[in-house]
Image (cartoon, rainbow, N blue to C red; front, side, top):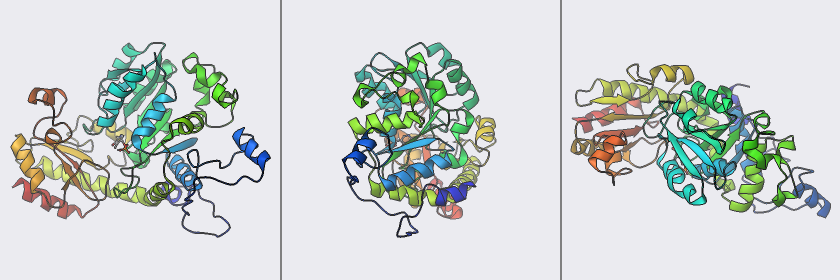
Length: 419
Ligand SMILES: *Cc1c(COP(=O)(O)O)cnc(C)c1O
């Protein structure tokens, strides 16, 4: 089936009521047929519902539908994008291990990897996503995962998948991509050889800024990389917390299964059924919406590039972008709705952000409603001028998340603010 059809139908088989819309199974727990049934479920002899911290029929539709769009083998929903990223890391790394992460990642990922997991004894080694060969110098036998973003937020760089995947595969290390900005509509990292995809569902998936959530999806055949691989000994040894279960012996997608059985069980960042239902609504229109986000962003990027007050525009769909060639290679159908541009001074940038009416000053992306942010006075406000330059965030930089309003209205709004 084609993408738009999967977005509307994948993962849902009608129940006895024949309900056209996916029902919200708002429940904490499920009745077992008898104690034998319960025992079979706990022992994985039979698959079925136990408790909503582990699984839920509404969340199941969301997971299956998203997994179908990513061409994956299995997925597990989480309470936020950050918990999806944390679980992907915690699923493979323990105290004494290290992980390799791109410098250009979402702010929450920077603090998670640079501070929070450091306190758990996990070291993070950073590489420049524009120089993937740096990864090789950082790898040792304790390296457990390589994490990067397909289109980076907020710097809007583009990852060279082939280069990163080649290094990860050479060393038998799991590669993990945060595909939040590109979405599975423009990029399917699992078909490019990546092992695991993580997402914040809070952005383009809900599409209207309605709920916080996330998902982890794994590729088909990941077991072959993990089986008997000394880096991932705990997937190949009996799990004492699960009656000696050996994950790499199971005929199931093992990476996401372990997140469900061990990490959701013990750490519990499970999505609410109502939020999963919102993501299902979002997914139905995701392919249609992403086309509009991307075409509107490109038109606005071209408009800004020709504006005399604008020094520079960062959008990988522009021919002038240093990322144009990679973007054409990996996202030929569109480069999503995020762009940034630079004006001369901090004061000018603030006046522009304050001068728009349709573009709202908000720290979010991927909403149907257009958003403008001035990183130097919000997300990166604590940095000095020199630190801003080093972080690649000039004082006059403005970021836009282009929404679904009429493109001409959005340009008129920017024109007025820039005048
Ligand atoms: C927003 C975002 C996250 C974090 O997701 P939450 O759902 O807010 O926890 C992670 N990665 C990227 C690229 C994001 O944009």
